[in-house]
Length: 101
Image (tube, rainbow, N blue to C red; front, side, top):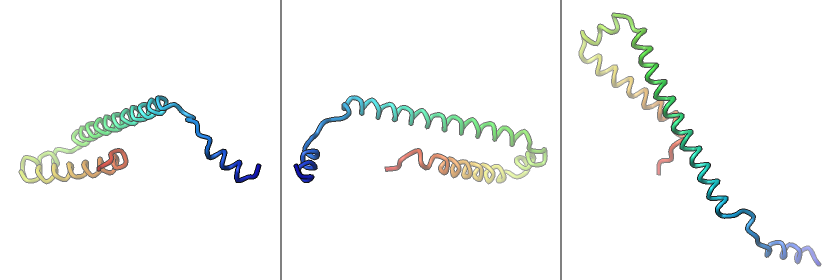
């Protein structure tokens, strides 16, 4: 038997090495763990944002808090800036987590 015949016999031999149900169960487990990871990241990020906002509010001095009452546009400017920074941070954090199609 030549090497060409041997390779031809190997290439003609076909057997399913893994069951289709096994592959489907494995893909479902991977998807489930991926979704669980997304929930953990989202929950921890929201908890961090809440505690960070509370910490900043508690550590602000009276002068900074009085700016909200004296200058009505300061609150709008500060809110816009904070929301923009939070959105860019979340985009950076979750950029590889969600596929945009």
